[in-house]
Each structure stands twice: as C-alpha cells, then as structure tokens.
Image (cartoon, rainbow, N blue to C red; front, top):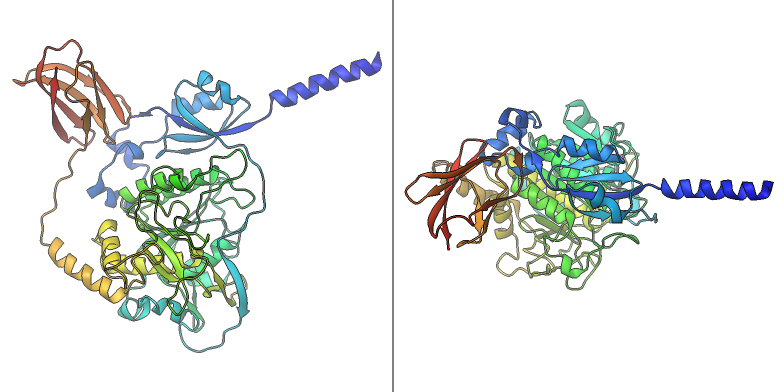
Length: 537
C-alpha cells in the first residue's frame, strides 16, 4: 500500500512538472495605442529628436500596448518587447495550440524552445604580437590605409568626432579597464550600454568577440594602435547569446537597433549573421536571403528607413553563390566582405547574390590578419568578416562627420560609386575597395548642390486597395493616422472616424455607397493631411 501511494505521488509530481513547463515564444501583436506627440517625444534622446525633424514619427515609434502586456503577464512573463515588430519575447506554460485561444490579440508567433550547443564565432585568432614601434598607428596603419582612411580622413581632422556608433555583439569584457579604451571612457564617449539577455546596463562580460570588434573601430593606444573612428561616441549592446543559436538572438538584435535609434545613433556596426539555427528553430534557406524574410533583415530595414547607416558582416561561409547570411541580404545597407593585404578575396568571405539577384557584399576591406587589441592590451591579428566590418564602420563614421547633412542613402551611394570596381561590380568583391578621398570629394559636390535646395515638406504615405472597390477598402500606412473621412465628389462629408489605436491597416465599408467617385481624407498626428481618390463600383 505504501509503495502504491509513493507511486501515485510520483505521478502527480511528474504531471505538475509537465504542466508547469515553461515554453518561450516570440508573439506578434495586432495593434498599438496611439500616443500624443508629447508622449512620443519622451521615448527619444535630444539627438534622436533632432533627427526626427526631417523623418517624423510613424507606427514603429509607438510602444507595445500596456494592456496587452498586462494580459500576457497574467499568464506568463514578458521578457522583452519590440516596438518595431510589435512583438514580445514571452515565457509561459501555455502550449502552441492554445496561444491564440488565450490571447486573441496575437496575430502569429514563433516558438523558440532552446537547444544548447557550442557555437563558433565569426572570427579566429591567428597569432599574438607585442608591438614596440614608435609610429602612431603601427600595425593598424596598413589596414586603415587600404581605404585611405588615415590620409584622407584622420589627417584632415575627421576621426568620427560627435558621430554615434552602436556596436551590437556578444559581450565586451574588460573594456571598463583596458588602456585601449581609456580615452573613450575618460572623455565620456560611452553614451549607452545594455545587455538584452540579462536586461541590465552591465556589458563588460561574456564573449570577448565584442571587445575585439570594438577595438578595431574605437581603440587608442599611442604608438601602438589607432582604430578607424577613434574619437566617435559609442553605445555597446549585447544581443548575441553564445551558448546556442536561436531566433531570440534575431529578436534581441532588433531590440538593440530600436535602442540605438532612440538615442540617435548614426551607425550600427553588426559583426553577426544568421541563417541556420538549432533544432526546433526557424532556419532560413537561400530563398530567405531576399532582404525581407528574416527577422533581422526586417529590423535593419526599419533602422535604415529611420536614417541609420547599417554596416554588417557578409559571413564566413566561403565561396559559392549565395553563401551570405542575414542581415547582409537587406537592401540599401553596407554588407562588408573580407580581403587580404594584396587585395585578393579572403577565402572564408561569403558571397552573393541575394536570392532576388542583388549584388552582395557592397564593399570589401581587410579581414584576414586584421589587427585588434587583446584583453591585456597587446596587439594580435585574426580573420573574419567580423573584423572587416568595424574597420569599415569607422571610415563611414569619418565620412558622416565630414558631411553631417548627408543621408544614409546618399553616403552609401557615394561609397558604392567610388570603390575600385564600381563600374563592374560582382558578388565576390561587390563594388570593391572604397577610396575615402574619392567618396569625400563626391559628397563635397553633393553638399554644394543639396545645401542650395529648399527642404521639401514631409508627405504622408498611404496606399488604398482595392480601387475601384465595392465592399471594403483597406488603407495601408505606417503613418500615425488620427482621423479618416470619406467625402463625396462635391466635398460633403459622408462619414468621419477618429482613430484611437494605431495599426498598419484600416478598413472602410463602402458597400452601402452608390457607384461613383469619392475622396478619402486622411489626417495624421502631426497635422499633415492627404486626400486619395476612390472609385466605388
């Protein structure tokens, strides 16, 4: 009898454990609350608000609904939330089959149950060297001059000053004590830090990868090593989790981009790439390398549209068409490949094209035997597009400093047109090795033309479909719409609706209207208006 009782208790205990097992999801939500302009502005730094003067606010700037968060936390725990994706990282005992039943405001979701592995990183250390040369740049000289960064930028006083670079990586140990970053610390140029796994501002731990990457762009050791943007301002974000490869790392990277946007970052340097994940995760085939499918490609596209210059690694999967990883596949960013000092391709550097046929990478620079600063402030070298990316990000910062009014699209276009293969780009070298002198000259010309042109007023962007229509019309827009009016052809208001919650899609019922021509008047939060013609048949 006693043994039977023990067995029954064991079964009950097992059932309780099974029932209480936590599962993790990325939940994508339906809508957001509409804020006032004043409320929106509290989510951004003064530098970011200055950038918003030309860009304005849109759906992506609104936070996730507090009401939805409260309901989710009643059934589990919201670990993190993304306003750009309108999504949350959620832990709960609820099974996949019941998620949408419990939470009708969830549009779709991704299960991200973890399977741990030991993960190789996108850079390898080849040798250690102690440097005693008295030259200012010493070992970093040749890798910087591959793109004329010293002679055409640093020597003219353009060293990244007042440009904000966000580095998104896997950890930054000893950056709070290394001599290589002492000037950065002492001059107050570390603007922001955050670990998106632990949800804390402390980042000087975990993988050494981020420290090495950051040294290539921002370190200063007099007579030993100078980074590519030694006087820039920096934000350091841990988005990568090294003990497994999961979709949550994509989600965290987007959180890093959002935070970078909120503090007014000019450049995001990303020495990370995603394509294949652990068991039970959403992996991507080559068809997903189209700039639209992966979460990270969607995230960097939003960041790009916010005016941020994205510099990211091509990947280290070697030769062959389409070996790139995401977010390298995103459009109108800077995907960086790796070369040797003799300007030939580094054998590990990934190649394009994207699945939809666009050239990748955009540019190449030194990625084999690229010098960086080790944790003990010695100088070593290593391989990887992880290293070519920050090397190039620093050049971009110098160009941004020299031409602060140029947009990310204008700077990227100037870089592509003034690299050594610009007239005949390919999917190994992209547009080739950038030449800082030529890029700077092209932007000087653009400065003189653009500065004499009056600034155009921001216009609302709204599409309507179907048109003609007979039942329902859908308005699709990222604008913060506050009112929609339906007008007759002679201008009389037929119906008017005030919008209290934000979405990217709004529907109007036109089934009761007689055939004819109508107008839809759309008003936004900042007072802008646009009128769209509608045919009802």
